[in-house]
Length: 433
Image (tube, rainbow, N blue to C red):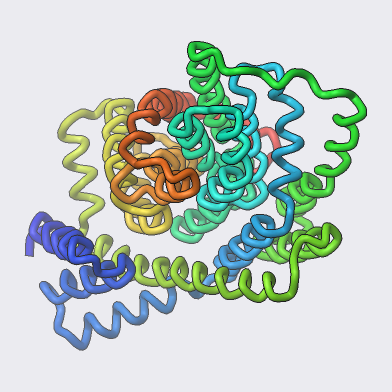
């Protein structure tokens, strides 16, 4: 059977099942099995699909994913978000639209701790939106700022997105990926702050003024234990004290102890957090398992080589190819959540980009930056829905307000793509590559 027909069967079945509201993980497995049946018998397909699904999650590093999810949920409920907002507000009082700027900084700080765009949008938006409403902010603007800045946590480590990517690629250092995400994540946050500043300046949003030194010291000391988490976890992983998985366990323990010290979490709340974390972890790990089966079908059928040949037939200029890959990933990000997108499209596009001289670490940053943008776009952007749900703003109004942020982030994406040193100079300087 031709490669083109295999690709048509695979993606036609997959998107058809999605259109019928079949869960994405089940759609992936059924699409992989249907495609395999085109060239193998039922016994062979059943055995191989089950084998690949089992080996897909048979990885020690993937244990970090549920642990980081648990840590993020503890932070979201343990009083840490409020302290981070208070700390972020210290830097933004003199800027027009200071509450919006505080929201961005808060998402960058909290995202770096929780490693989740959805958790950041929920924690920061839920805490700061009532204050913005009292200050007569346009809630569509406030919601757009929260949504556009929340995914920075997917780039600023520790983040499970890089762990999932590393598990797919194999042989790529998680420490190098973590260090590579800092500059792009910070640039993403600063880009959102620039757009928010221009809007707030044009609409004459107020400032809150400078904070007295006594308050600065009190708020800083109050937030310091939360930020020590980054030093402990990232420092331990990069310094070789423990692995990313062990670091995730340390992160959970640290967050739990901190929440107990703050007396902001009860046994009943902790039990609910465990249940919620288990449910989310089960969904993500089943997605990883299912995507391993699809990755086998994609590799077995020769789809990556066919796509590479197709792209190279358009142009042999690597800059053109990188642009086309970004365009495809942006479209993909509009329809798929970050985990299945990483699992499905990394085996397709990584070999193409590596053959043109792109480092796998750089590709990982580019891929996840694309998915960050995708998480805030309709029709299935998870951060978009969470952000709009918190403020009760319509998706239509917020989507229009998000357009300037999309333009800024796409411009930054191209800069990250074509200037690899922005991603690579920190891991290279630290000897991680």
